[in-house]
Length: 510
Image (cartoon, rainbow, N blue to C red; front, side, top):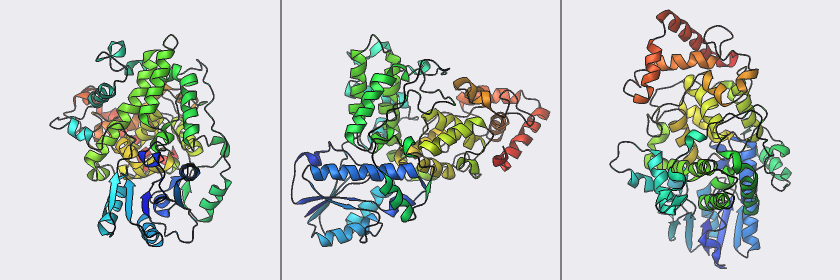
């Protein structure tokens, strides 16, 4: 019997493996504590992965493929992938072993070492999901000093002829990022989010709790809106095109107390589990735009395409270029603990309360909430990036290390010293107020940087610049802010730093 392993984020129904049936091939999937326990995950994340895995196995079985699915409570389950494979090999007299390339370094290493020890032939095949290869980014930037996203993004646009017009970008420019920064003020009206067909997940909830899997976040069936199979993911994508794309670009960076999803697609879970592919996603969005160009502006579409084929593929390329060393980078030498309120949302800072509460309720927050609210505060509070990594990896349903750690250590915490981002993404309250309404109902005054009612972000911001100025002395993009720092009178700066010091020491009091 030929054994083929399918990991929980390899639910690609279109893979060439499944194009023909073979009674001598058995597809193996498994729910293991190895994967639930390496970090505490959101209950919705664990349910979403297990639910999608179970539906994928059922689809394969119904299509006539031979499958073996090991549940979390199977008496034979050793809770580790290699030892499960060992008894499977013996039980089914395995003649060969195949697996798709894992996207996490630790799993890639584990399976590679396992294959070196077994006596039967083995091979790793491509997952047939991404638009670029593991090391394409490394080759593309060979000899270059900086790994500029924009250049890699253009490379992919050209390679796949996406939003191109005879070798030139549609609309005469590559990037409409400056058009994608509007604050949503109640209009235009936001359609409700796409709701997948309801599935009874009570058995999974019971199983996870029965087996003592440690989870975070909150379970509410009404908040669970993740598609668990390909048909639902395609419906979700269609819904985005028909209802949300028209305003996506304008408001992709906005946030609001009354809105969780705004105009976002919420397609990231389906993408990162490979239920749906990036190329089909962007093709469908671009085709919909071309057939509705009289209604939808190019800037709405380009902003979406850039996230899928630019940022996502770029982050994966950075991951495989820099791992395993990347996971230990801490360029700013930050050592503080993550505040307790990241697990409870109990803070008087409304922006953090809203963003974290949404995360605990929905296992979701959009990219600016992650970057400029939760990530911004963690960096200003000089939190150890390893603690920030663990939180992001666990709290979001779409978080898989290859995309999470590069966003956290690189874009969010500047722990990689500038590999991903040319400057740290930090701000005081002004930016938060510019992009949303969180400040309007906050306990703190967004304009003040001193006093008990002053927004903590303000003192933390200037304190961060002062504490870390030696790291940014030669950074041109930080030059203006460092000059403004120098203009603050020494007595006032001392007061700012004293307030920031108190916040850093006891963040859960604020």
